[in-house]
Image (cartoon, rainbow, N blue to C red; front, side, top):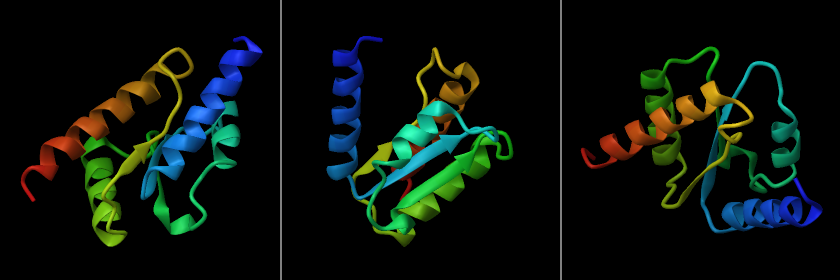
Length: 109
């Protein structure tokens, strides 16, 4: 990845965090380099960050946890952060399934 691309990705991450009320992060049990980089940009209030460990949660439990996080913190704009498909295919699939579940259940509320 070029330095320009890397800088652009960091700026996009910062902007996404700034424009949201909270962040949901699917994590792997073993920390990824991405997790360390993203940790610098999380919300000033730690309670506005929800981490769902894909290795210890199934999608249904993670969806319920994210919905609870949204309700408890009155999140209107949710930032979902995670590794790229190329960096962790299973984690990307997990995050996609969780976001789809959250969107699907949001209409029921």
